Amino acid sequence: MHRHLRRALLAATAAAVAAGAFAVPAANAETPLDPAPQAPAVPAPGGEYATGTVQLHLVDEGRPDLWAPDMDRELMVTMWYPTDQAEGATAPYMTLAEGTLFGEQLQFPGEVLASIGTNSVTGAEPLADDGTLPLVVLSPGFSFPRATLTGMAEELASRGYAVAAVGHNHEAPITFPDGRTTECLACTTDDIDSVVPNRAEDLSFVLDELTGDDAAWEDAGVIDQDRIAVGGHSIGGASSHRAMLADDRFDAGFNLDGTFFALDPHKLDKPFMMVGAEVHGQPGEDKTWDKAWKKLRGWKRWITVDGTGHSSLTDFGPLGEQLGVNQDELDGFRSDEVSRALVTGFVGEHLRGEDAPVLEGPGEDWPELVFHNP
Image (tube, rainbow, N blue to C red; front, side, top):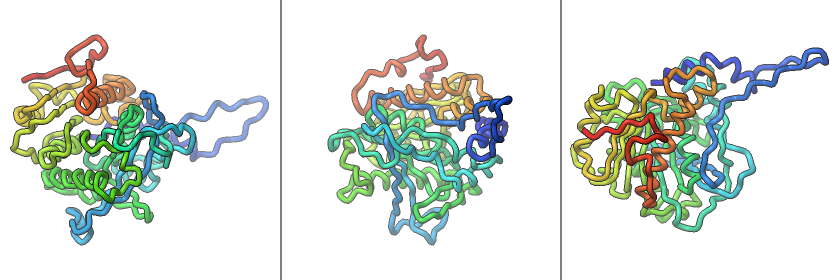
C-alpha cells in the first residue's frame, strides 16, 4: 500500500532531513558549499486563488468510538479555502508526532514527513461571499493521515471550493489541540468491513458540524449547502460511496482506487466516479468494482490510469518523484496532474455545471486514461 513512498523516503532520508536536521559544515574560501537539498513539497495548486487553511477539533458527543468505546468519537478536520492572503506562514504537512508514528509504519524517520512543504496560509481570511463555495469532503486511505490528500485539497481550494479533509481517529496517527497524538488502533483489526459504515457516520457528522446553525467553523457561512461532494482514497473512497447512500446531502462522489468494502446493496442514482490503478480495470482483480458499477444508476465513470499504483493519485506520487525513486511507470508529477484534473473536472461538472472534457473519453491530452464501460 505504501511501497512507493516508503522506497522514496528511505532512499532519500539523508538528503531530505539534511535540509533542516543535519548540521552543515562551515564554508571556506577555497571550497564553496553546494546548496543544501530542498525538503520535498506538495506541488503548488493551479487555480486562480491563493489558499488558506485551519484545523477543527470535532467531538460527536454520545457516540462511542468504535476503536475506543469508553470515549466519544473525536475527529480532526483540516479546512482549505480560497483567500486573497498570499503571504504568511504556511501550514505544516503533519506534526512530528504524526510523522513519527506514520514513519514507524513505513519504517523511516518521521522528520521527513514533518519537513514536507505546503502552500496554504494558516488562518488566512476566506475570500468568498456568504454561501457561495461548493464543499468537497475528503476521506483518506486506511492508516493514511488526512495530510496525504493535501495536494488535491489545495488544488480544489485554489479553484474556489471549500474543502474538508477528515482525520478519522484511531485509524491513522492524529495530533489533537491539547497535544495528544493518538495511534492507529484500527490497524490490527480483522473486521475491515466495520470501518466503512463507521466512516460514513463520521462524514455525515462533519457535514452536520459545517452546515448546522451552530457551525464548528467560524467561517462556515461561506459554504453553499446545496452543492456538496464527497470522495476519498482507498477505503475513504468506499466510505464516500456508503455516505452518499446514507445521507442525501451529498450530491456527488468519487473513489480513488478503493476496494468497496461493506458495499451498500442499494442503488445510487447520483453522480459517482471510480478512478483506479491498472489492477482496477475491466476485467480486473477487484470484483467489488464490478458490483459497485452495476449499482450506479446516475452519471458514472470507471477510469483507470496506466502506469500507476494504489497511492499514485495521492501526494505519494509527486513526493516520491521529488525524492528520485518513484517506482511507478508513470512520472509522479504526471500522476498528480491526472488526479487533480479528474477530480476538479468531476466536481466542476456536477457542482457547477462546467464542461469537463477530461471525463468524456480517451484523448490526446490524457493518454494515460483508460475508460471502462462493462
